[in-house]
Figure 1: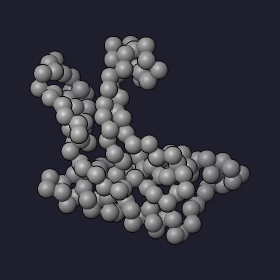
Figure 2: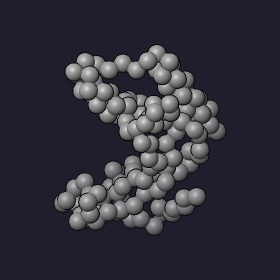
Figure 3: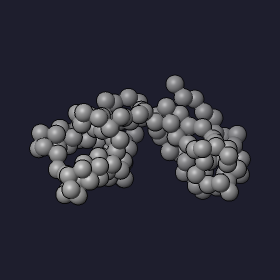
Length: 136
């Protein structure tokens, strides 16, 4: 269970407010077999290997469930590269399975008490298992 009280944080920029809203939303989603689990968030110092902006005192980092296959975009790039740079196409059965799993995740989000709309579904935001059987 993630509990956080963001009311004590003062002097928030609009990007910080957006991030805090995203964290609250992620923490409220609940569990679904085709939605990546939100574990938490932490702040890394500028000297951290995770820091995105060395000029920043701290960078926020989201901690999400790990899927060993990587993103769908990474899989397409790697498999296409291994196939003489010819676009890799997954077997139809796998494609249909991914579509069905994605639809169940969207149904879960859209039919919650407070519906959520993803607004950024793309291959780099879809993660798969190494055996390509699961997509989140």
